[in-house]
Each structure stands twice: as structure tokens, then as C-alpha cells.
Image 1 (cartoon, rainbow, N blue to C red):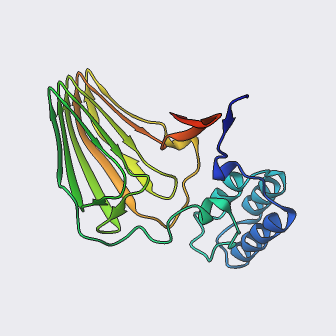
Image 2 (image 1 turned 60 degrees about the horizontal axis):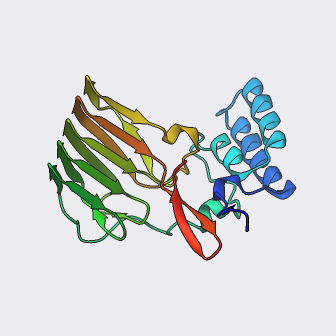
Amino acid sequence: MSDELVPDPSQMRASDADREKVARVLQAAHGEGRLDLHELDERLRDVYAAKTYGELVPLTADLGMPSANLPSPVQQNLPSSRIGGTPGPTTSIAFWSGVDRRGDWVVPASHSVVAIMGGVELDLSRARFAQAEATINVFAFWGGVVIYVPEDVTVRVDGAGVMGAFEDSTHKTPTVPGGPVVRITGVAIMAGVEVRRPKRKKIRGDKRAEIED
């Protein structure tokens, strides 16, 4: 049996009706002066050329207006609310060891990650957030940190590397606006901090294996 990938919701096909809804939002934005005529023309061309929900979502994300209310799997497959709950641990520390934090946990307003000759993996796929904005402070020395951020969480990465690096690959896929905001900052000294989209499932017969984008 050949391998089959579980569909990425943002890559699901949009309908003509979906495109028309987005077009109406853009036209209303032009009427309110949010878009000039040139911008409207550019975005309308993108609307009618769009094949997937992931291509439609960014076209209205910066307008500060009611959304097109697309019946998008991008929205349907995400939790109705990620905000609220009793804050979980405020630290993840790996010293010559490893920490793997995933599943249902509540990210506090501030969470510190320390990886010294060790590794830390934080997966926010199913996490809730104590507040609408959270900061993850990272200190990595001869270690590695991987943070998985789903598409309904806005991420801002501004850490510094000293013979190391903060690498953000989430820009490769669109962010669904309106969710929590996570700032990832800190310093990586001879170490690496990677910010990625969550792992997806790859089906092989009866078995599932995790793959990364």
C-alpha cells in the first residue's frame, strides 16, 4: 500500500463561493478607504487565482474587518478557544538531558527554557494559553531547542545567536489570525533554536509515523 498523507487543512481546495466571500470583504475594505484601487485590484486577482484556503486567509488578515467567515477546515480543525486555564510549569530545563513537553498543557504568560548540553522540545499543537500573549525565553548553550507552533498561534521570533542561531520556518505556511501570540526570544550560544510547524501524521497501512514539514 502506498503512503498517504493526512491533508494539511490550509491546502484544502476553496470553492467559488469562498472566493466570492473574500472578494466582498475586499470591496468593502476599499469602500472604507482601507485599500486603494491598485491594492484592491491586486488582491482580487489573487482571490480569483487562489486554489486553497491557505491562499485566501492572508488576503483579509490585515484589514481589521469581519472575516469572510469561510467554512474552512483551517478553522474547523482548530480549538474554538485556546485562552484560559491554570498555568502550567514556568520552566523547562535540560542539563545533559532532555525535556519533551507536549499534549494538553497551559502555557503561562512567561516560560523559560534552558538547554545546556541538552535538548528541549516544546509542542504547542494542543496547548492552551493562560493569557492572550505569552513569552518563551530561551537560553541554549551547546544544546538544541525545537518549538512547534500551530497555524492558529501567531509567533514572533527575535532571539539572538552567538555562534548559534534562531531559525523560524513557520513563515512557509500562513498564520490564521485571531489566536494567541507567542514571542520567542533569548540567546543561543553555540546552539540552535528551531521554530517549526507541528508534525503531521503519515499513514502506512495500519501504522502512523510522524513527519515534519
